Image (cartoon, rainbow, N blue to C red; front, top):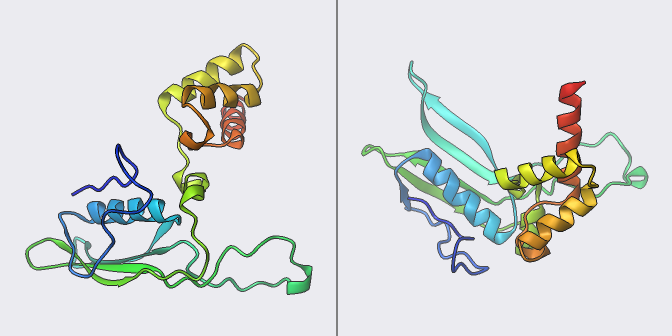
Length: 185
């Protein structure tokens, strides 16, 4: 099963919310389902752990959590902190397990977050930003002829009919060009 919350005709709200007892064919299908749900709601997931059993290390259960799950222990006094907090001890998670028939079943679900989630800003989270091969080609061609990254970003925004439809930032273009340049030197 594959659920695409942000595909053609999708709304801002997920059609399927994770529930206890939902079945999936593979562990990857389950991960993709929860990642799509997270993207639609406005957070990013991470795999907390995968328990593997036997000599061949077959996965038996897994916990997928919000990436702001843990509370960070800081050595800096709260008065001296200049950066905002990134980890909020968020309880949002799902636990999945493999049943006897070979299906992955959601066994535990917690959908409550201890931080604000903004679906409109989800596309700007690092995990959700991506560039297509077309974007890479446009960036490389424009860089070869000397077009600045800001102008290249404006071209890509124009091709995708607006800022709300593009899922990358100007900084991603600069990072790509810097990585490409450092490979040659």
